[in-house]
Length: 192
Length: 187
Image (cartoon, rainbow over all chains, first blue to last red; front, side, top):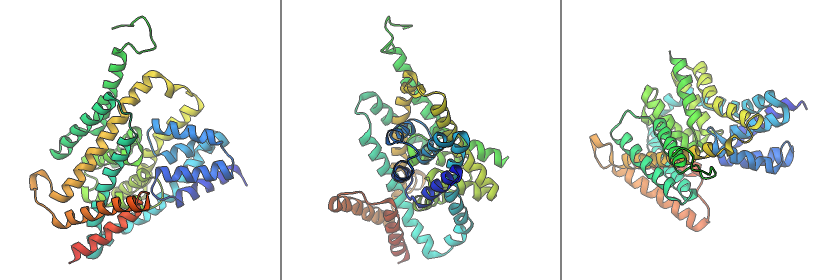
């Protein structure tokens, strides 16, 4: 089969059959791209996962772009990324056409009142999992706590301050502290 | 112009969505609520729908928000915008800048970003759980059904983990919450 078509179909399959986002997809991608098709090696897959953690965006997109690029350059990356996006696009687009009518049914509206509570709990649970995996050092903890408190105030008092600004401040603080500490490897105490 | 707003709004989300889907949710909330594209209610419903349908949650939310604003074209614009940054960054990192992420200054920036994202997600989670149960600051009132459902869901999560030794899947939790909602709000 044409490699581009194969890339598209494989990633479309992964996109269509993985629920629950991110980490569930990594397992599917590993199974399809490493074990069955042998498009990339296990080590490369591990590397992308690490890169994905340090770059923004959905992990599945990162993996698809990487694998596509390895196999067939820029076009390959494009085709694989489209493959993973198209199924969820179609599913959500169809849902978006019916959701409003659907919510007018009392029983469905009641169900969604319950679901709303589950979403809050899921987000809180995701945060707790992230905290458990975090470096147990003072600076990250302090940044985490400050961001949490500021974000709570933003939410409670509907302050007009975006979470992106908060992230930029955190990045700047961390970079400043790093530079002020003399950027460890640089000897001779550059520019204090 | 709405298409430009959708594009720029979701481009911002795509650029700053560190920490996976749940890291992106607070950003999407921010953008969606500040433009007034969806109500907080509808957005929360859509988070649950995105969690229960295939594909990356961020992509699902972008598609839905775009579609709710202007139909197909809006959906395409928002979806492209949310995917574009990670697509470009991975291409750059794999093709050109293999060592960029190991640069110590880039590392220092990331060391600041990651805990900040965790703090933001934590605050969003706390805020959502508390406001579901007790309303907002301007309209405090205990919502008994919500408190009962919260208790049931948390107990099921801990119970499942204790007896089955693994995490209750998000989809199961959502299904359970839907049933609890139908029963408790129905009677």
